[in-house]
Image 1 (cartoon, one colour):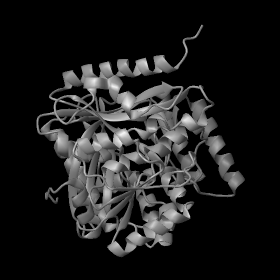
Image 2 (spheres, one colour):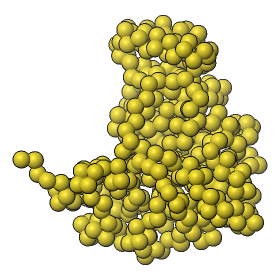
Image 3 (cartoon, one colour):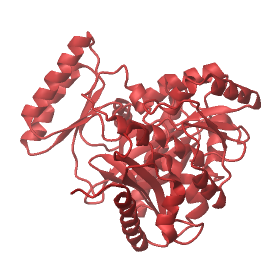
Image 4 (tube, one colour):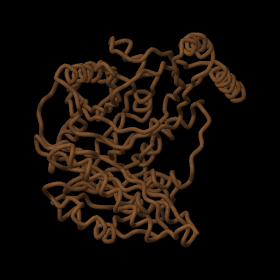
Length: 464
């Protein structure tokens, strides 16, 4: 495994492009899986407009990935006081390109394609050797690359989609002999029919199974099944959908639910030449299958670390054989007895934890700890960063010591445009808590939650 350790973005540029000198144009097109899954048959989905707006405003995370000479495309210009806060912390930020008419229901790439002036501006970057680096590459990013002449710094979208499939993850883990929860690939209704009796045996013994879409993300596209009746009903629904569509292909996996002590996320980078560089492993914080943050470093012993690193080596080498290069994120888990399932799913894209790396490199020295979190906020009017800064006061990270370093502010106000004047809307504040040990961070987390509650109390009327 490659152990060279320049900063992460320089390492990524070298791995994907052969040189750290190429400028990158970052695109934070979060939940690219929705586009990968567009032509796949899966499970029923419900997505609220407000939630979509917040997800699409997560594009601001990409602001902290780039540096001097790089570029980032954003749906909205950063709050001026938030931008100044980042500069005061010493970040060298990329040049910001803002779309002309952002639509809350579109991701940043789709917005960019609808902006002829921005397309023309990006086209001028092609002569400088710039490459597009999206959160994940779909056909939409390929279209932007084609229209601007700025090539992708990723493999083709079809390969990224294939690698990101949970079907591919199961196949690869089986091939490499890596532990994974017992399960069944369900690529066709016939395979699903074969899997159902086996899954029913698990249910009869008091277990639980999950049916997952191959491209589900953030807790969507997953059904937890605890009874055979529910399993059979789900099977009939999927078969009817396939018959109605006139297709004999579905994109699902069925797995046994396993007990766990902790969720893990680890990342490695595959170079075009086949090199594999382990980036990190973090302990994920999840609620009901939805990502909430990370703990850094994870609570793992040396033997557990070795299992993860060995899995990364094996997966990276195999992905390189398939022509994949760039960032790879893998979800794993720790069993109650300390055992490791090193592969739950492979993500052929950036991960939430990818965007935390520049912060770690600069502000989390050896021996310190950090915890990435997001805080739900409920407001009745857009919140300026200056007001947030005033509210948090000494709890906001100032370059050293303990505090919350905000790494995405756009998501706080993303739902404001969808609500009537004075009507409450939901947002999220993302940040990384930094401190000398876990105990101060837990107290900091509590105090931040309390202070954010005061903002809601100021704006929202008390029920009579």
